[in-house]
Image (cartoon, rainbow, N blue to C red; front, side):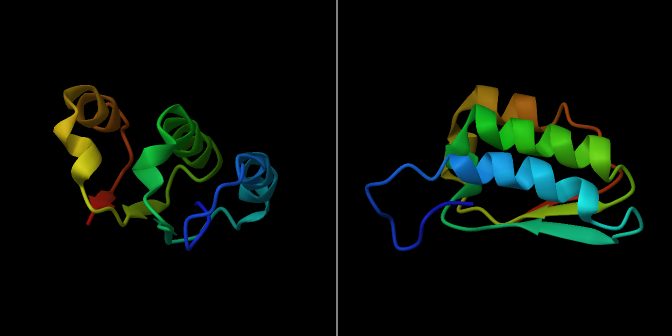
Length: 91
């Protein structure tokens, strides 16, 4: 999701790459994991990615590995739980 170790460079181009790669993942993919540095720090781009996954892989379980700090922001929690994935796991 982001540069590790953290670097002072723009890696937002990766989101365009994810948009290109998601349609190539088999539709019967059982689960997809989101990790990296801290995926929720992508803010709106994180939610864009979730929308893309939901559109391209509606039957896929989504696992997000996070330290949870972003969930102290009420809007982050509210927006995340508006997504209606069959299964989602936040760890």
